[in-house]
Image 1 (cartoon, rainbow, N blue to C red):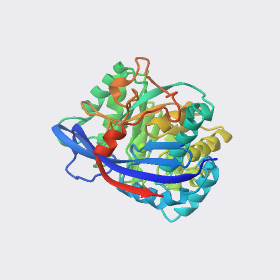
Image 2: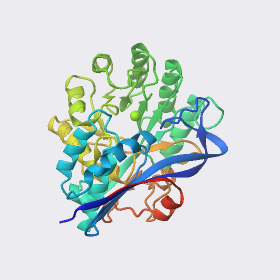
Image 3: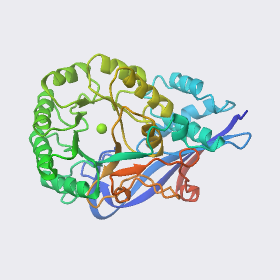
Image 4: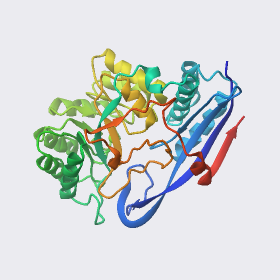
Length: 393
Ligand SMILES: [Mg+2]
């Protein structure tokens, strides 16, 4: 039996071209804009779990890779020492209890690395360990937010043009992340304009990412979604996606299905949220929602009710989970914009890519079938660009 005897957390940075922060300069996930000629310094972190018999698992964060999450991950890492890495269920349970005072965002990274370890140990992919319902994933384009600075997604018309370009590139759907200023009229104009540009045969979604200021604004934009036959309406307003009653009342007035719960963490709270009427579909993310173990529990809960679950964001763990689900639709290539790279770290050496230009002509991405998560990380790059190393042994 393996015993975990070392956990490493490597914080590192990488550079991306033609993107930067907007005037508000807040460094949150959704604040990247197009900036011609600019170089942006992005930060992520990687974890490596090592065992006394040579077994090892690893994972490099995508959107969860924030300083805040790194702190939680470092709190939890010592808890793994001396354990059997294949006892993922009890580890899930213990880590969940350990960070119960916090938002649980640092948990998923460790669980994902344990799944990678298991796949590598048995020389099979995590997708196959999970049962593998499909090996290619229909993919939608998920945009960056709009910007007031010229360039990129700087007008409703720019969204419409970009949606059409994404349709022509093969994407099966297009999701608008709209305007930071919470202008409901502009948001609704964008919703209607995108539908007009792409025609009736493309799935469309809108995610104001909690930027509309009031419930009435949420209702106003929701009516535009109804008019333009949107596939879902996500996290509309400033309750920050956690108020059951507000969304229950929106659902009474709108036809478009409501997708909320990206910011409701873990299976118990998501179950409560849905059963109380807060949404039509649940959102799950293996990075955010306590790992692959946690995301599967959420998907199974939805399946038990005969409902669908949508996977949030992109990455090899997301592909593995989605490959095992019947009751889901698409892979989210997040985030994209005209002339903008997807801000995921350039750490893959075996052809894995979440860059928009690498989508197949049929609008799908493959599920990696190599051992573990099926990706080979460039540890030279990570170590060369490392800003901090935390070792637990
Ligand atoms: Mg969202």
